[in-house]
Amino acid sequence: MIEGATQPPPASLDASKEALIFIRGVQKTLGSQKVLRGVDLEIRKGETLVILGRSGGGKSVLLKMLIGLMSPDEGTIIFDGTNLSDLNERELAPVRRRFGMLFQGAALFDSLDVAANIAFPLREAGERNPEVIEKKVREALALVGLDGQQKKMPVNLSGGMRKRVGLARAIVTRPECILYDEPTAGLDPISTDGIDRLIKDLQNRFHVTSIVITHDLGSAWKIADRVAFLHQGRILEVGLPSDICGAKNPLIQDFVAGRCGEHSLV
Amino acid sequence: MRNLAARLGKRFVAFASGTGGTILLGAEALEALFAGRPRWGLFLQHILDIGWRSQLVVLVTGAFTGAVFAAQTFFQFNKVGMESAVGAIVSIAMCRELGPVLSGLMVAGRVGAAMSAEIGTMKVTEQIDALRAMGVNPVDYLVVPRALAMMISMPLLVAECIAVGILAGYFVGVDLLRIPGAYFVNNMLHFTSWTDVVTGCVKGLVFGVLIVFVACKQGLDAKDGAVGVGRATTEAVVVSSLIILIANFFLTMGLNIIFPVL
Image 1 (cartoon, chains in turn brown, blue):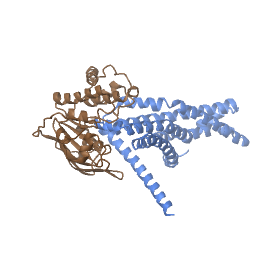
Image 2 (cartoon, chains in turn purple, orange):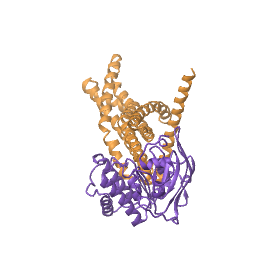
Image 3 (cartoon, helix red, strand yellow):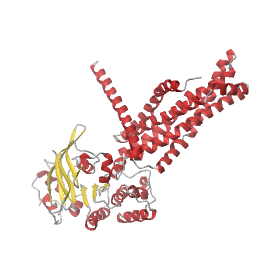
Image 4 (tube, chains in turn green, brown):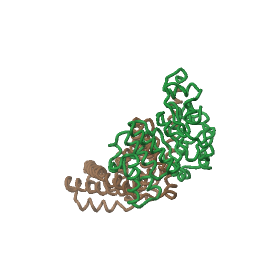
């Protein structure tokens, strides 16, 4: 065990679970920077996979590729048997509706109030009954502890509140798969624990597949079934939280211990 | 010398890619018109923003342009005793050139800038990615309702601008400069035909389409945060204003073949 690391609880890994997403040899260059250099990863149905790694390592780019917001230069991403690279923007729409996504900055629509933001994916999915929409919005807001804030505009919310509204919007349609880009960044410890519980709760109650990018190791150990460590565009290690915590790779050791060692300066 | 050539080449490539991108956006919007879901609520909201809320600026522009044009024409024509032609000249100029071009420039400044700033801000704050992540095509949601609203609003704004310009010209010519009203109106009606009004409205429609696609394209391509949004907004106004002036020449020549001056 790495010195100084927080202890992950023992997690169960059901290797027999069917893979929902296959990522094979994915490469991406943005400008002159090679962000992903051949990522191979499998995400299983109903699991919570946490992707760890240093800032600028390509985690957000990888997450956006899973929903087709960016396309790989090389390699394939297969979601439930469909190669996302084969689909154009219009054909991707039904695939994307099976996902929910929480963006790093929440990405709330400035022109809509909280209720309209959360109702947006419901209306796009064809829900027209105002009572049903209002009930679902209230339920989603209650889950993130913000019931009663329906009429506020995004500009009047704190960073943490925006994030929680973004999370409510991501889960309101009960998607099969939710992508979280730093769900607990900027939140107080109590809200962080609430979000962690919510992610686990969605997994247990609705068998939601979750892919979470975070730098919060405490959250990672709490919610992860598996952890992948992405560094300089490659997956260095995938395994149970305890595997990552006990990894031999000095880079991962430094990351887990929160230590700026000679390897982490590379 | 080589640096200059490289810089010019870079500018040309940027111009060609911008023009190509704007044309492709237009084609995508046309496809979305048939393939996408109609969004009547957004369409009406944009009619309000583009058409209704641009009226003041367009009416003031039309009124003072008509007034000053009538005064200047009178000052010159008065020397040769042709002041009764002022009404006809103001009317034809407002219909064929001044109404559509000045309305286009004012709308490019007011609406084009707002469009590119709003869409650009959505782009740099990942709101457009959020739309796409929810299975919503940004062209369906952001571009098509604006384009349709602009296509309805611009010809009407141009018609208003023409009407107010002629009324202002009448006021200046007849009430202030003492041109006989009967000559003013009779010559105006004799030399102005419905084709002049149609020419102005067609130009307005084309300018509206150009403003929407240039502004939306600039917004959708915005990057680098607030600085990028500012750059996109400036580019949207400058490019659409220049395109209006350039397109106006070709439209004048083309429409003169379809609707020749009688």
